[in-house]
Length: 331
Ligand SMILES: CC(C)(COP(=O)(O)OP(=O)(O)OC[C@H]1O[C@@H](n2cnc3c(N)ncnc32)[C@H](O)[C@@H]1OP(=O)(O)O)[C@@H](O)C(=O)NCCC(=O)NCCS
Image (cartoon, rainbow, N blue to C red; front, side, top):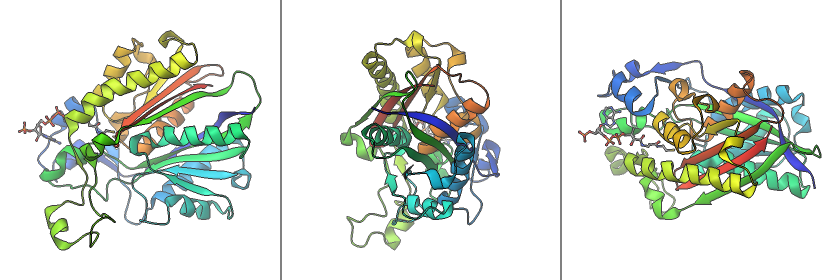
């Protein structure tokens, strides 16, 4: 049975850097509050007119280049996002159009911060089953156009940023290389803890002036609840992946957690008793880019020479849904 190897990584973030200090002109917050509570120092925002599909295309081209492949060699696209460019069709078809590969299936996947690892799980199954040999997996997010940038929305507004990350996945018969296993979970009892209630197809009309005036089209979050669950579920998912493969935390060479909050990543690292140098942490520069955090961090880790052939890479995520997931990859 073929298995699934990551053969290329890439990312794209907009040029516009938004510092914590800049946010203080929009809302009642401070650099100290944001850094102390989250570790975030700056994030990127898209310029007017830049779409998620465009960022996804730029990240994909970088990943294809690293893989030494042409877009025409891609058999399928899986794109994870919670912030699609349009209600429908999915951002995946716009990416496919930008890459110029008509006919290739484009699957949009909605699992919020766990979107990339859910996507990896789907792609791994496609490749193992023999259905596709080369898949482009992308996580992309535009948060800056959808957050309440006033003091009312400051708890969320300071956390999120825009960006895209991509990987090229390929079938391989090479022993001891590729995805060892993926583990995906959800618990919908917590759906409203972190969500965007409007616009809603379940409401007539989907959105109205009153909802807009109340700001109920902006996402809301019970931050402490998210925090509490994340620091339990993430180590649990890592242990599940290790146990499935008969491995221990000592076997991990690099841990890439979803970049939600530096304190969450630190707590996960400590619970797993991993040394600091095994943790990938770039939240200070990009904030939380949701489905894009892990592929961006992975692409940076590759560029920084932090992964060598044979290394054990562990990825883990937690987010809205709640959803959570982990994956182990032999590099
Ligand atoms: C959001 C988070 C940083 C808030 O930290 P916290 O220590 O729990 O802070 P609280 O929410 O209790 O708020 C403490 C105070 O800071 C205020 N505050 C909230 N956001 C603020 C901001 N950006 N700037 C300044 N003050 C802020 C609150 O209004 C509150 O004030 P009050 O005590 O007068 O009511 C933290 O809960 C967290 O990181 N949660 C996880 C969120 C996450 O990762 N979400 C994405 C998941 S994928």
